[in-house]
Image 1 (cartoon, rainbow, N blue to C red):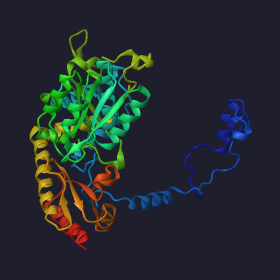
Image 2 (cartoon, one colour):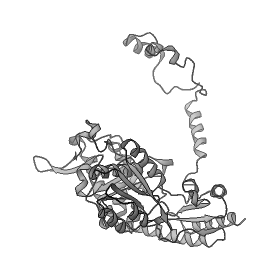
Image 3 (cartoon, rainbow, N blue to C red):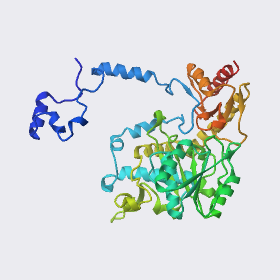
Image 4 (cartoon, one colour):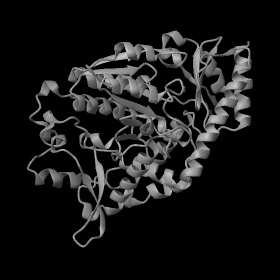
Length: 450
């Protein structure tokens, strides 16, 4: 006999219906015309008991390729970095995972302080003056940055590098349609942004130049040079970054970026089949009052005690929404907390070590793979932890054979860049051992040389 997940008996239901003055559940839908109702049971399988359902879900779980059983060389925005166990211990505290918002500072001081620490850490990482308490993900962070730039400059043109993550560009285009922005894509040469095209297309109508570094191909871009071009025309410089790369590379804010955004998943969050993730957003002090989302500020109470509050949010975000630069008024607090705990746990030296190991292991993998007959280098530009190789077979076919050996191969770039057909984007983080990289090289070599 299947057990019900609902505690209400038939008598309970009758009592509840009687309390609101109706005889049957169907009476609750009397206002819906009969021809709009389904008028038949849903086509669903029979209900399962709790142990039967647990077994069913376990079977579905076994169909997934998880990071405990498979070796992962897939990146492209979601990365298999090590997550210290302390993060789950902190996130599992009920005062954190059950909290929704911090509108009442008198009962939210702990969470507000944690978010303030998160903002401070993001500012230190990015070299910016101010950060918000997070957005939904890297894509919304980039689109919100573009809207801020358009509002701050009074312009509606956006130049975005084709080397920016395709998903981010898709989100940007979705935002741009209703706001009447003109989005122009800038091509690439040898894996990096074609700066000659920027010079050609920059004008006084452009609100911002948007780049990503390391870019979607893993190549490092010249932020300083692009920022100088943008600023010469009065445009802002928006830079999307992999936060782990900032353990080695100079902070974008010190190179001329006006807004720095990115995906914070690699800062202590699991890949989780695509989310929930974390969009970080930092800007110059000049742009502080136009920033989207929540900002936590530090203050003192009437007795001089240190305290924290939500601050600097324009009322338009909540009330006069048609006048708002942004309508985002929420954040990813639990994910931001995870990032703060991760950065504090790793510290400067640990964070630098993660970046350094990722860099060296990726370059070792690059040398191993390009040494096989069926893998060829595609770009000569400097890269961080991702790189592109061209195969002599379709990437999907190669990945299928790798999967049979419990190896998750790289991304098929031909899905997003037709000119890169049969090219694979490979990612190597600090978690990958020399033995795993050698195994990928040997297995991939055997597949492509057949």
